[in-house]
Image (cartoon, rainbow, N blue to C red; front, side, top):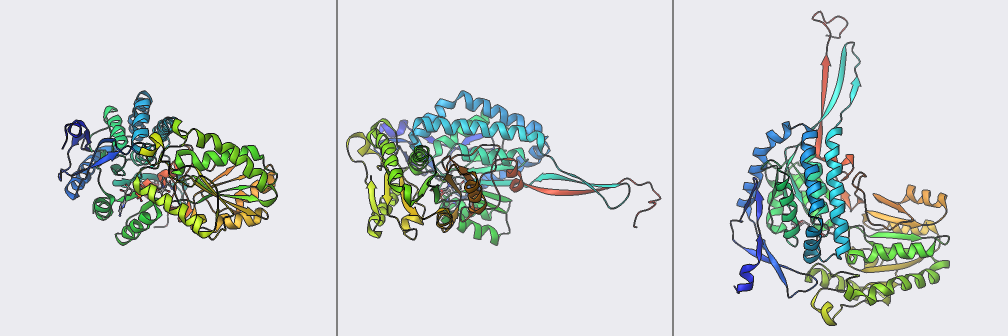
Length: 496
Ligand code: NAD
């Protein structure tokens, strides 16, 4: 090991309120995707013993946390939100270095995480049940939400602060304790988030972090007898495997998975607005958002004018890539995958309008940068129009009318987000009615979501209920129904 390597940090696990090394002593380098020569630090490869310790800590913390009144639980989350605000730039810098997001976008993600924690903190004051009338005199029924116990949170690399924040926020405010297993590609941001909870004095064991390969830990987490439920965000492929395993063990699982999100541009749309929305949605975060715009379905009469607008908007992004307009792909695997799909698009007969290559010149050549890529003449059945690419690649397909656009839009395995650009309110609302997605936008990009609104997808994009919003409690709690009889001892009038 060289002397430079020894100075680099190895991000540890956070178990029972302490930073601890994984038993195996094995690590993997955390590489800066904008400069593959730079190692940022090392990610620990935890194993089953480490998982056991984390679950035990969460289990021991559960009775105390469960009994802590939910408004008091919320205070820890508001403190964490305030600390996150204070350390916003530090987290955003780490996020950009580790995951590759442009710095402004990283700041946006941290801000979103602050909003999320503030929202969940306040939700602690609204963990309401219902009061229900009884058929019997002097009786009433009420319901209350109960936490599940120890829950596992398995998260991806593409929103390494916001997704752990929204899963932990919902799980904890509901009274669960948790074990967080982030992606091995983003241990740094996960550790910073844990530092924030530690600084907020969250009681020990309430939230624990273990890093390591999903292939080793994932299955064990789902099967662990003391893990009561699993909330997963990641690829549809991994999600489906975990769903089968959770089903076999009779456990609830929430899955937020991939997307193949389409924008529909109708002939009466503000084409300038639509082109800006598509460029922002398709190429922001280098297309590595689950809600990224991946397909564009355009009414044929405005296709030439819309394509010109798109080219006009994308040009500055391409010309200024060295200034950070479009970040890198997260790692070499992702780079290979995206280049494979670009190659496939050409082979399938789509026309490459712009981009289509890895950036090899100057500083960009050291990272995993791919030029924003647009294919036209894309048939809806082509692989590039069906499968999630998760990179800066957009397909354009001409359509006769809105009905055809909705049919094509729905004809994929996914159903996460989508958007329509039109000035016709009736068509916009018909679209809202008929589109099979969980997050619908009108005259705005396919991306984004606010803490107080439910988020998630239909079909192959999501299973097991929504995240964020008060609806997130539906996964992290179960209902207890309570019957109260306040008749006197003679039980007059009652059935027994
Ligand atoms: P991934 O499925 O490879 O990994 C996600 C998490 O699962 C990681 O922590 C990983 O270590 C773990 N994992 C991997 N294999 C596992 C296994 N066999 N058992 C258990 N856990 C395992 O996904 P990724 O590449 O990190 O993330 C990108 C994907 O996430 C994209 O498909 C994207 O659309 C999706 N995503 C969805 C949403 C949403 O809300 N719908 C949000 C963000 C990302």
